[in-house]
Image 1 (cartoon, rainbow, N blue to C red):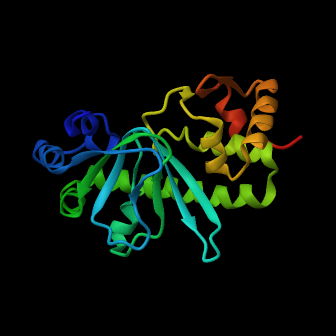
Image 2 (cartoon, rainbow, N blue to C red):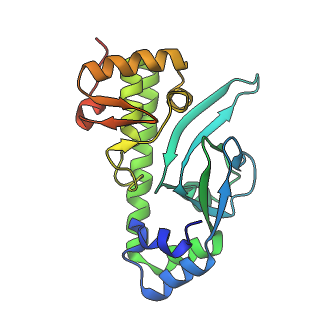
Length: 225
C-alpha cells in the first residue's frame, strides 16, 4: 500500500507548504483500502477528514427518498474532496462509493485546519479547488438538462481530466463502460453506443479496460449530432 509521504509529496497543495506543515500532514494522514462497492464515507455523518484518492476510482452519489440513485461525479486517483463540508462544519451531504478497489487517504480535521491557518499557499489552492468544483457542478446541471447521451458522456469524461481537481490522470483513464454509466447516468448499452460514435469522431479511443482521450477540447465542446 502506498505511504502517505509519497502521495502527499506529489499533491499540488503540498508543494507550497513550509516543511513543518508538510511533515505534520504526512505524519497525521492515514491510508486505508476501500474494496469495490464499499462506502468510503456516508451521507449524514460528521465530517472529520479531508479525503484523497491515492489509487482507484470513487463516485460521489446520493439516493432519493424513493430509492432512486444519482451520481454527481467521479473522483479518480490524485483527487481530494470534502473541503467544503469541513469549512462549513456540516454533516456530509453525499455518499462516496468505491467503484473499484481503491486506496484512500484520510487527513484529520485538525490537520486540515492547521494547514488552512498556517499556509497562504494552501488557502490559494483551496480557492482554486472550490472554484473548479463549482464550475464542474454548474456544467453538470447544464449537461443533464440540455445535452443528449453522446455529448453528456463526452463532457462527463472530460470533467475527469481536470488538471487541478485530478492531477494524477494521464491521457488514458482506466475505467469500464459500467463505471462510466454509473457516473453519467446511462445504461451500459447506451455507453457502448456513445463511445463508438465518439471514437468515430476521433475524440477518443476505446481500449481494453479503459479510454484514451485523443481530443480533450473536443470532448469538452462536444454537441450531439
